[in-house]
Length: 185
Length: 156
Image 1 (cartoon, one colour):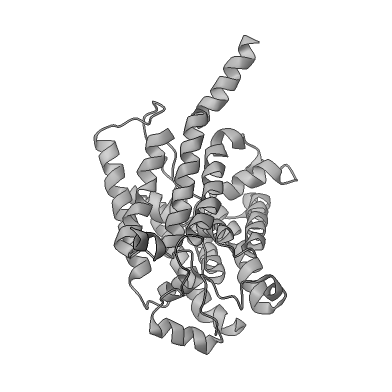
Image 2 (cartoon, one colour; image 1 turned 180 degrees about the vertical axis):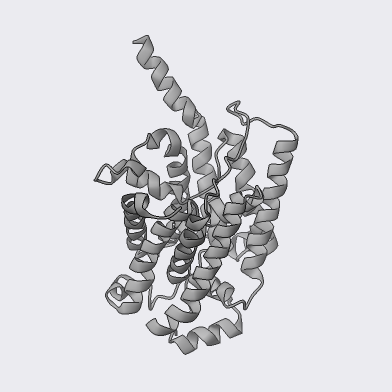
């Protein structure tokens, strides 16, 4: 039991559990599992400009999801503070490829060399965090969903738009990995 | 007075009351734990996936889709209702010309590889202590806002 909570979970445990969030939310209140709608709800609640896209009753449609979202932060905190911390056991080839890109610190969940406050002012820090974040927000809004809403909820319901979106996710991810990252590092 | 009361009850009813809200919080906490323990929030794992150097991420996403699809099929077959009494349905996405899914999806994919995180993991990373991701979230909110600004001019 202790080892279960201290170490990473195997894929065949983690994956099916992630999938079960879809029926859980449907059964609790007929809610569709999808995290990125929260970005729209937060804009609706706080953003200036009165744009039509954000003019709706965010409490009615999105309060449940914003509460779910705050749970994610708490859950991330709890999981990170239970068990012992260890490096992510990525494959030797990946480690080699990333070392060639100039990453030396493999401790933690994301490379400290890029994801820290000081690195924000470097090109790779700015592009990874600020530009990357912007593209996540713009892209999910345009596509109408992210990994949870399209790749999991949408594909589980056999929706064609979600399949197109997921192919796009991979096209973009591959382009960034093979063409953008080598320029930055 | 009675009228106000009805409206309030309806508003709360839409979210399923405070008990349901507590369940959403618990589910969110569970999801944050799963995102961390499965390591899908890790930039390293996302790189390994986009370089096709491990089956792990594909196994996780694939088996998540299978378990979700089986559950949804089961719910539909039995015509189950939610605890709040509604009939359960996943609203279909409108295909249109499909441009928004292909282009929007690709733009999101670029951001997914650069940050090493999709929206759920962005928030779970803040909980994990990668505090600089607060900037990524603010930037993502700005990205969503800019979409709202340009929406009428973008092809669907």
